Length: 159
Ligand code: SF4
Image 1 (tube, rainbow, N blue to C red):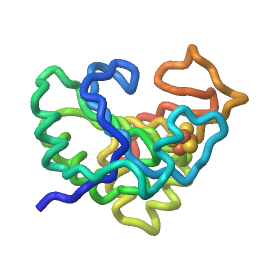
Image 2: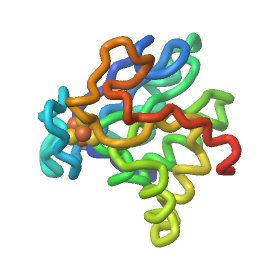
Image 3: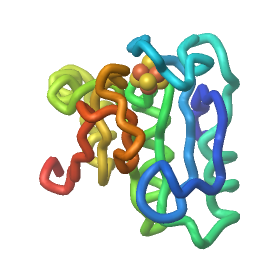
């Protein structure tokens, strides 16, 4: 039986959350509390609703034009176990994984040393956009990011 993920919502076709046409899972629960966050409804760890990985996959499979899946938030790395299940199934379909995190890559590597599922999710991730949203560094012209401190990191080497 596949696991459940606590989510705030799905967007089944997006062109602004990573390259190509993407299926976006907005996870529910975020510890970062960035000033000026555009998704404050995703902060409450008891909010949103539960959805099974198999249900999400069935929706993903309805659209053969998708390039891959994006995990956004909320903070995806607060639910690494079920997201690994989903990411593994998406990778098995030959599609890619793009993840937004409010943690920096360096913080995630420290977490990965203590939490094997964080390590596994980093290994499954093709591209990571890292770091909190910093309102003072907000830039509407940035590709796939909200503020200039955030980096688009190719994690091919991490594997
Ligand atoms: S990490 Fe994202 S969802 Fe969380 S507070 Fe910051 S901008 Fe909002």
